[in-house]
Length: 172
Picture 1 (spheres, helix red, strand yellow):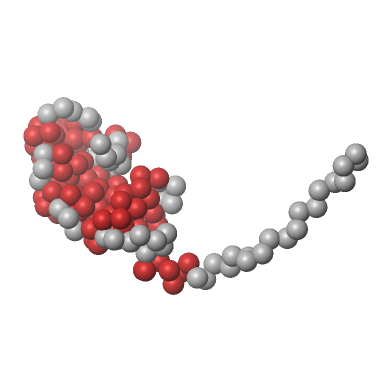
Picture 2 (cartoon, helix red, strand yellow; picture 1 turned 90 degrees about the vertical axis):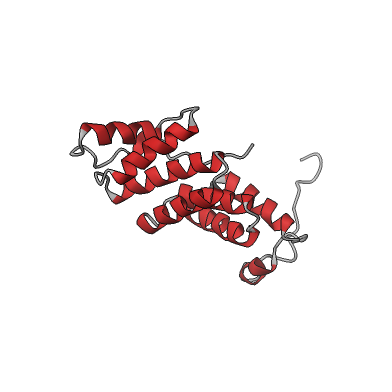
């Protein structure tokens, strides 16, 4: 089972002036639910309400994309993630989840790019490294560093010899 970076309910920013129905749709869009079709419907209503600022709109798009991905609607999910990225270019969950959807469609090069962008934005997000490694294996990269990364890695100075270790004399 793949991990999906959740956007959570913490993003309810800037909707205080929204009508009660829109606020409720947004809140329910952010909650976990077993009914994925209902989640898509709730998120769609929140997205189409016109009441959301860019950040909440982007997060709602990611949440709808996650539900669509789980329903097997990868292309629709990718469209949601891409629109979220346009609205909020630093939204890590949009890049990661778009990578998962692209991987599901067999677009491994684009998936690797999305996982790389996820890592750039959130270097401590381990699932992105694992997902990118899986894609690299599928692309046939059998060495530690795929060709696109070799040139940047050469810039890192790695000592070829380590200094001698000096241990205290026995009996000291």
